[in-house]
Length: 155
Image (cartoon, rainbow, N blue to C red; front, side, top):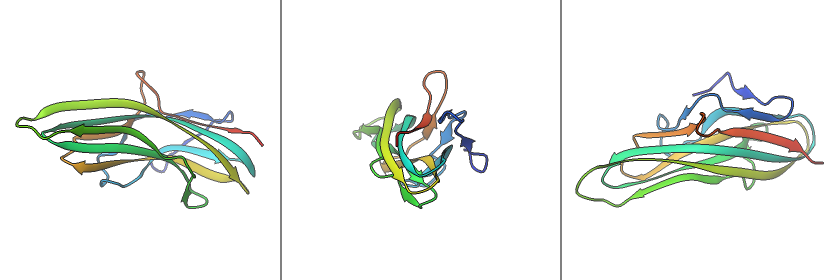
């Protein structure tokens, strides 16, 4: 899981997550920094876009879990308004035998964000388990689908 060596956005405002981020290692409901970070250079209005590929896996007879992604303004210490998305959800009714399930999905985040000065914004995600056990939960980026982050200054 990327930590101190966060991936910085290039001068064109675009970056791709180079490695998968394990969400299962954190407690349910805990947001994990993916390592994708936007350095918004100055005051203005920005379009922020992310494509978040998520993966959940379970072998259980009754599972209820989902992954939520969001943009977080590190400078302001607050979630970027209206940037939360449900990236993936699993609901499996309880049965008499375990079923191996693994689900992939991709969700888009699109937010217009006006800031008074330079800011640092990062992509975060959390696994939330409501029932059962999640065997694996990740934000994924590979040749089958990328997790990306981008900004464009519009005003």
